[in-house]
Amino acid sequence: MSVKVDLDRLAETLGDFSFAYLVTVGDDYRAHTVAVDPVLSGGGVRIASVGTRTGRNAAAHPDVTLVWPPRKPGGYTLIVDGRAEVDGNGLRVQPSSAVLHRKPGPNSPPSASGCGDDCVPLDG
Image 1 (tube, one colour):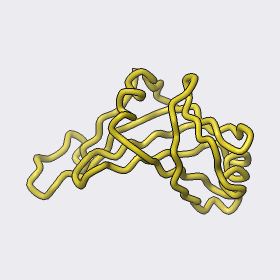
Image 2: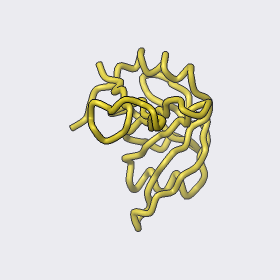
Image 3: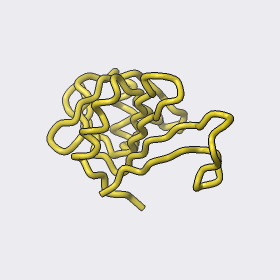
Image 4: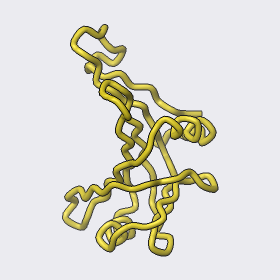
């Protein structure tokens, strides 16, 4: 099930992050991860330029994940799943779900999910 992302909230959240990692998969379903500089544009996420392998992977398997690492240790990681479309030399990703995720420290209280994480879904 896809969770509708409130893009206004996603735009606000992106202000706390710099670069991201784009994760695609090839025909062998092995992950291919590259660093990218995505920007929110026209209701989607635009990546101006990607390599040949990344473009080929996204064209064949358009479900992708963008991961923005935290700026400092202990901060949240932003994870956005979406569907990619090759756009010239780059990609356009339509987000389907987004979450802020972090692994709490050893003295943190138990999480609501019980799995030891600390997640905040970004949905409408």
